[in-house]
Amino acid sequence: MTSLLPLWIAIAAVVVVAVVVVAILASRKGRAPVLPEPAVAEVVPAAEASVQPPEEVAPEAPEQPASRMVRLRRRLASSQNGLARALADLLSADKLDAATWDGFETTLLAADLGVGPTTELVQALRAKLGVEGISDPVKARQILHDELLALTDPGLDRSLNLEHTPGVPAVVLMVGVNGTGKTTTVGKLARLLVAQGMTVLLGAADTFRAAATEQLTTWGSRVGVETVGGAEGADPASVAFKAIERGIADGTDVVIVDTAGRLHTKVGLMDELGKVKRVIEKQAPVGEVLLVIDATTGQNGLVQARIFAEVVDVTGLVLTKLDGSAKGGIVVSVQRELGVPVKLVGLGEGADDLAPFDADQFVTGLLGE
Ligand code: GDP
Image (cartoon, rainbow, N blue to C red; front, side, top):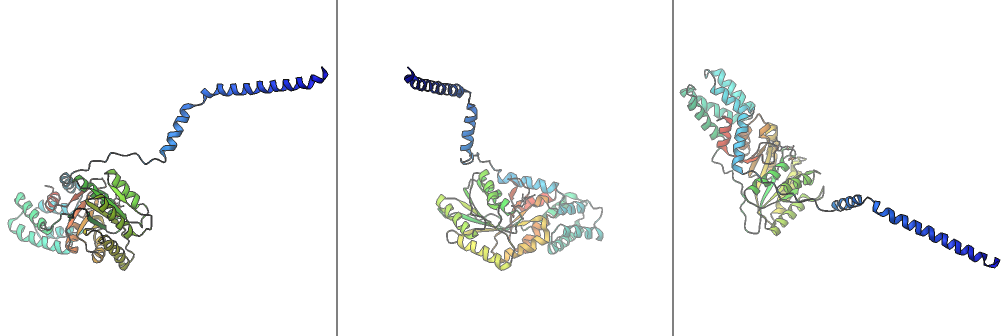
């Protein structure tokens, strides 16, 4: 019996171990349903979502060009535009004496109409209103309208040259000093063209400014347009080349290329923009070079714009921030100064606040008609 004792101890130990193991397993099994299942369910998709592409957003429907111009007219009429005020003051003057004409001339100059156009306008109005007088307000207003319209050169071709052969996109190159609203204008222009039924691709060749590519991509995706970009500091010409290559592959109607507007040196600027343009032209002709000018910068903006016009053949002007400018006269002076028509105007920060420029609507807006 005594010799069997170790055997009994061994059996008892095995039984104890078995009971403990069964108890542990039973307790685990019992706990399993208590596990917070919803928590597991939430964690998994969240982790997957972070690696998934962003949700497709239905593209916005941009506003048609015609109704945009109507809004521009209203904004000009209601703004504190110096030019509009000068015209209103003249029309409501008691008499047209020397002091009235002097005041009129000063206000026109302050509204950035420029010395040449101001002198011309005052001379023409003195000759006509001096004879006709302002006693007939309808007639006086008509004379003002006609003279202002003549100054804005209504005969200029302001349409964008977007002609292209099948399989090769039309190319619009956007140039101008940083901060004038270039990138914003590229985005707005894409919307305007999409509204007219065109397919558009954006080239983010402003690789100098870190946020420019991202800013452009956001604009593009809102209206369902793709953006070709490069890393910060990448060669702008190579980004432009890739954009055109992609445009050709996709059969896109128009590629709009944004550029950096560093006025470091005139030679540096010429080299950079010249290279971008040459590289694009290896694949497609550049139909439009649009120079973006901030209307609120007045004569200073004009000096900078002139440098751009000297280094690259500008085909059209875009005047931005006309909504915030008291100096509507810049439309006339900038066009005269650079010998290039104003083709588009920016009239606010909203996505559809860009309109094709229309001289008659502009003058009508200024006169508050
Ligand atoms: P970029 O450096 O030339 O590319 O300039 P951005 O496109 O980044 O624009 C600079 C600022 O001008 C931004 O805050 C824009 O919202 C603003 N901006 C652009 N166009 C207009 C416009 O027509 N009216 C107003 N009020 N602001 C504008």
